[in-house]
Image (tube, rainbow, N blue to C red; front, side):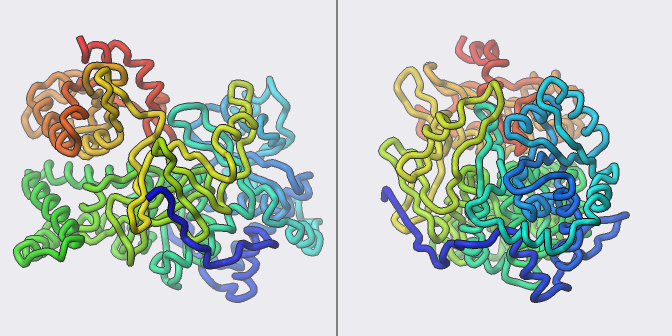
Length: 601
């Protein structure tokens, strides 16, 4: 099938803005819990009325400070409650937010804000404010910088005391679907991040459809989720507005290292993350089993979970398989689920393909991960699996009101009201905004840059990025992600990069998961240094198992013939990973030319 469209069930709104959801909750049920906020180690409920009060106070301060319709406000902070307050406050006065990733250098943040026309900004700390002012000296000066942890929002509220409710409401009511809501940046796996111009209408187009399609997540007074991806990323932003729209309680986690403790306190009913998060959950469970000498038990449990899930799609599991699963439920599966809280029943994954093996594992342990397909250029979700219509390995059917087409070269094209308005200027070193937009938007279709297919039932499958495809010297086309996703599932593997473009065969660079490799070495009484471990022949034999398992999923011509274990990992701080933990392939290849050449010596 080359095209699949899901008819819209709701009319796209012709009036209003994202702030209408907050007003609606206050009018209908002011005591409804919209947020749970951790303060002094305790989780406290924030009602619709309380959220409205905080947003209005900041909005009045922005208005009193000269921020109004059409202005851009920079926003630099980790995932926290105040981030959401500022976002809605900007929308209240008709301004658009320009979020920056906390991992960006001050110079990149300053250049981004300047290119997007942001003349004021809200940051998290006084240190960020000082660094931003220094970095901004060479460009157009920011008029004001408020730091959240330096009483910046209190200062805004104080500045806005003279602004009346009627004046503010007049500004809010003037905002309509065509107005710019944000300039959201892509994660930048292959190039500099690009700013996408997204309107209130882009968000509103998919909100009602998405929340209606996922009632198990959003249509329950007891629903609650935890947001831990960076709010600068469109996936987290989409979850934020969907929760406010539906009245689903939302908690924030600003430090991924605190995720387990945060989950225990918040007790979410569902979680949302990118594939790397679920890979880490799997690998952590595997490593814990190895530390106590139960790695064979975990391996058997994992194989049982995958077999059980696959059997659900093929007539149902046999009695022996059901018995095995019941045994491992007590020994393994319940403990893994408990690490995500005692109420979690579903998870949602978007941003990239999760992979069939991992998808079957989580469904088999009783935590279905509903894969979806999301892009910054589509204001988040294009397609998603539903609890009632779930095909592991796919990213589901298109949302109502969305059409997905497969071009002749295999590229996925998307059409719908959620498709962005075009790219914004991204600074002196970035591409021309109009030219970049013309490259991806044609005749109403967004050219996603992703390769995929659509099955006869309308389920979309994404195989990889178009620009990442390798063609070997023998003419064989290889999709690296298929192999990389499988290899990364091994608990000893940190990252993997498959190479082979123009080369005689396919090879790979592999980095170690330091925690997993250290535990492996300690159990065997061996030195734990990364350099020594990378050359350990027994560890290499373990990695060969991961490579062989990945090779079993492709043809012999696509299989990895050689691999090199690198002593140092690839991190976000070193510039090798995006803020959403995806690999920057060009950067890795540029810095590891000699290692790649050695694979073909």
